[in-house]
Image (cartoon, rainbow, N blue to C red; front, side, top):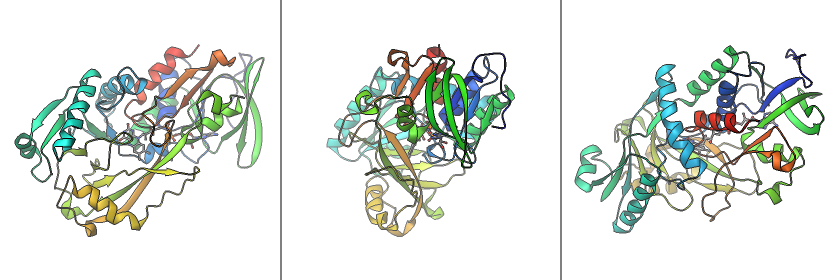
Length: 379
Ligand SMILES: Cc1cc2nc3c(=O)[nH]c(=O)nc-3n(C[C@H](O)[C@H](O)[C@H](O)COP(=O)(O)OP(=O)(O)OC[C@H]3O[C@@H](n4cnc5c(N)ncnc54)[C@H](O)[C@@H]3O)c2cc1C
């Protein structure tokens, strides 16, 4: 490897982080304050080329997640930390606010339960009547809505640039084109085998943080963990987006979501930092992980129909296939929400090894709080 090895400890490195998505980079930014020599390994040519750059870029308030779960706690904490970070480092963001709209009486009941859940998570929320909602967003279909004043959007790229800059300024190294293909526990910590352009090499690390996103279960299995027994085997759900013709981009001025169902937040109206309007993401469970990010034109009709339920002025021809992302999930189709796994694996005899598995939404929002949590459990 091109990186300078540290010679004053038994292992070559004190800390190695596997994966430079928003989570790995946030952890690197945080830990590099006290551990400047840490190393981040990334298999792609640059950081942030997978799920972290293929999402809605929403700063979630924390409404939906099970009270007391890591998702709920770290989302609520992380959201405020993220706004503060954005202000401090002038990262592109907009505190747009959000409506979750019900379109009939049955959905109003779901809305009330959603409001209660959000309140248990400590999220500031307000229930609006139909008239109050239409005053905010005259073009949507509604019989009443939840108003979330703390929801916003952020530029995921600028956020990752910021974490990367902090980590590197503190002395960390982010090594691209470097895929971890094996991990073995030994007396000096962990021996990592990496592949760089087809060339294999090994080095040692005292502590390893597995933040490999879509491949986190595979990386965990390198250590000998039986990922089926541990409940770490992930499933993958692709989420596609359609962009909306610019002539219709001003139909809404904030994020608008339908009522959630058991598995997803539903296809929603997303605005990006540039003011572009997109609809998405849907939820397509994949039989096996494949990173074909193309969006099928054939989905247009179904997309338009579900979008028209909340924004009736959208015609089929207003929609153009846009981007997609893949959710790394621990819950199978139809199962209730499962929490993230963020755990120090000492109970499995893997002292100094931290797994982050199933890091689906809202891990972008929560990234700074996740990093703080990892620092807390790091031995
Ligand atoms: C459709 C969609 C919409 C979403 N919307 C939102 C949202 O609005 N708000 C929100 O908060 N969250 C959202 N999310 C979730 C959010 O995008 C993810 O939770 C977050 O990006 C996960 O970051 P990560 O760093 O864990 O994973 P990743 O970004 O996948 O990064 C993992 C990295 O590890 C690298 N890697 C993997 N294996 C290896 C290896 N063996 N060796 C070296 N490197 C390796 C990968 O190349 C990758 O760069 C959304 C997700 C999706 C799919």
